[in-house]
Figure 1 (cartoon, rainbow, N blue to C red):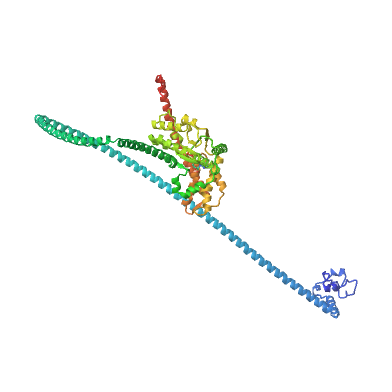
Figure 2: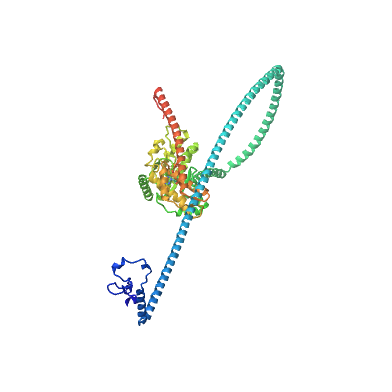
Length: 615
Ligand SMILES: Nc1ncnc2c1ncn2[C@@H]1O[C@H](COP(=O)(O)OP(=O)(O)OP(=O)(O)O)[C@@H](O)[C@H]1O
């Protein structure tokens, strides 16, 4: 009965319904239950035969089942099995539905994802397109500008040419006119002179008579007036003499009056000269202490006038703490080491009240010489004053006085002064060269004032061409330091320094209309440093300023990598032009000096030596 309870789940055994083999029963009378041999003999009616035995057995089994006491349970069990199967089927169907729903949701999600990606790609493409269009329009604008500039230049050139042509024509016309007028005047004067000479010759006798009569008349009038004048003078002398004589008689008769008068006169004279001398000394003293000499272009020294005029700035200056000597100055390590030593020595000299050493900073323009001199003064707690050699050369006769004023003023510094003379070659040139007498005297005054060491000021000379300096000037220098052009490492530091100063700091302050796009700043700075070979610190500073200006001028006010590289490239091109100009100029100069040297050598070989050379 186990199959009824569905326990073994094996196929039901219906063997009981299978007819028994022929050997076992006698069911073979009708021929259907015959032995195996009969099988082969089945006739055409076999298909229509009905085996009722199986049906009987089934009926019997149903009857047995009905009569069985467990029939009802068996049926319930079967029904329950059916219900369970149906439920299972429903669950399976639901599961399938859920899966289908899940698959649909997944499909939708994938579809949305795809759409989002497509949109992203589309917006990226749009952005790139707009950037490209922007670049194109800018390029077009720049091209237009360049074209406009070229046209302007052409027009200007044409105008200049036509003006110069007109000018030449006008000049030639004027010259011609003048020439004509001159000829005409000459002819007129000649004619007039001839006519006059003729008339004079004709009237000579008459004129002589007239002159003679006029001279006799004049002589008579003069004699009369002289006699009158002599009489008037004599009478006034007589009157004055009588008055003075009475006064002198009275004065000489009283000796006390004479003494008082003499003493008064002496005191008056002495007072006059004393006042004059002391006023001059006082004026010089005040001038030397208070007024900044006209030759000094810039100074950190505070005068009482400055304090009154700009009190806040003066207080700020006073409160400024000494800073590191190389803060913001980028130099190659060897130069850095030397200038640091100089700075330490100067600071110690100041604190020990020792004698200052003079230094000469030489090298190409814009390499930080002035910058270092200022930092040196600040670091050592001294004041600085900047003057330029070219200014002295321009003063002519007054240069000597001006130089003395500067050194008098420098000598009154309480903190000690770094006296920085930029472009020293502008006036301290070799004295045996062809220079003016005034300049020679100015150099002598300078040499006189710097001949001995002093604890009042330190002289820092700067020159791009130290070889043209007078030997006596070079002799006064204790330490020369060369400031070369920055190499790759220094250029990279300079680019970063000024990129931060002029781009990043203003952008982060947020006060100005300047934003910075997102790009690799460090890599961009390195690239700029690579292409700016041969540029000085000043040129790199100018490049950074140019970046700032270009960004302000742009529509969005955003500093991008493209601007950075484009302007750097432009600066490089500009530098190439400058170098070509300079080399052309130097070529000319060297050709000129070669010609001069050749001429001098030639004259030296042809002229006999001077037995007594003059100094
Ligand atoms: N080595 C440097 N480090 C930092 N900044 C520099 C350096 N060299 C030049 N600069 C920048 O360039 C500017 C000009 O430099 P500076 O006036 O010191 O040059 P210089 O050598 O005195 O030039 P010149 O010989 O023409 O007088 C400085 O104010 C600074 O911004």
